Length: 159
Image (cartoon, helix red, strand yellow):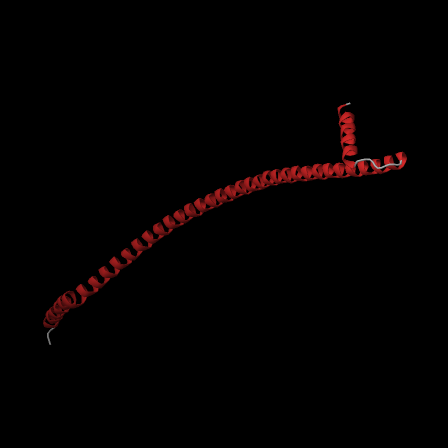
């Protein structure tokens, strides 16, 4: 074979190989690479968006936590204030009730003292009448004697 013919034939085969590679091999490889490049770019973009979203969510969560802490502190302060108000109301109520009980007890003591005085007055009148009747040797009317003793007590109180 002739060397020129071999070179021409090799150039034709090379041209066919180049055309075949360009049409059926190179284009699909380039498309696959471009799709892969686009997929990687989309993934990186999505990762950036996710990172930004995560940072925003963290900021929002921090804000919500801060607001919740503020609300909790406010609730605790209101509860403490209400508790002290309830304690003060209970103290006031207990003082009023204690004063009422003391007044009632004082009134009861005064009533019992008056009853005891009246009882003693009656007994003193009876004893005085009995003593006077023994001394005089005769019976004195208890009603008139009680009247005399009441007058005597009235004079003593007035004097």
